[in-house]
Length: 116
Length: 113
Image 1 (cartoon, each protein chain N blue to C red):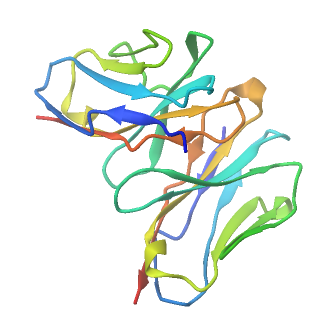
Image 2 (cartoon, rainbow over the protein chains, first blue to last red; image 1 turned 60 degrees about the vertical axis):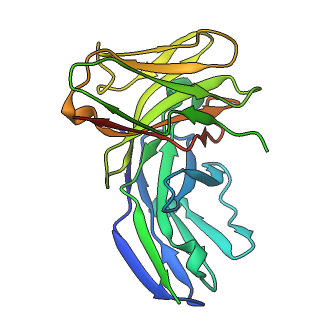
């Protein structure tokens, strides 16, 4: 069975602070895919990143960076110099290999509030 | 930029009524999904659809639910006899492959009264 844990229910920061959102996953698959999605107050789910289990390179995209550590089954997300527009719920999600179906298993989400 | 579109954005229905939620996936995508999110909770998988048939479904997706791709563009979720606990945001999503990122629509908020 697959499981995603986002232990931080809510985080509140002041604008320009850096913030890291934690994600820990459980899976028996050797091939799997990890994702982050953003859900702003308007409610839609916005895809941010996909990472394959065989690619442990960290990734940076502007103010966003992701740290994938297979040894600790973690896929953490850091926002540098946070802005008010970053306020949203952020979901980490896991998908198994193509042979095991294509469902995404989501974590509970972390509500990030960035205050001016 | 191509996007998944869902209609209606909000639907209120009486308990026991049938509802159909509609979605237009991204045109070159092959995999289609429905997820739901009860208010304040996490997003839960309902069903995936590929090659004109259900490829996977969750335990939530019981006989009250059905999906259809009636033509080349629409993808629908039908709830046959709605219950109060069906009240949730329903998201349609699509992807090019079974392991690639899924792109979500803006959701349909279903309220059962």
